[in-house]
Length: 68
Image (tube, rainbow, N blue to C red; front, side):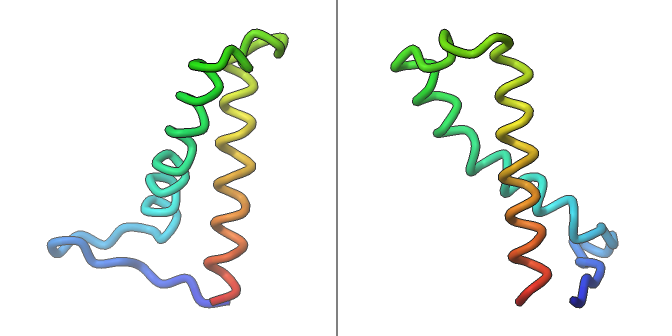
């Protein structure tokens, strides 16, 4: 696994930061679909559930980034 810092306009950021943004962009349509079709009504705590989904997506992205 090679994680290297990313240079964004002269500022080095950890590779985790762009992966966090990518996970958020992946989760946005999922959150909107669940709200639109009422799927979020069937969970005990919608905010906690959305956070858990975000963490799962982020973990998958980190693992995939570590392989390539």
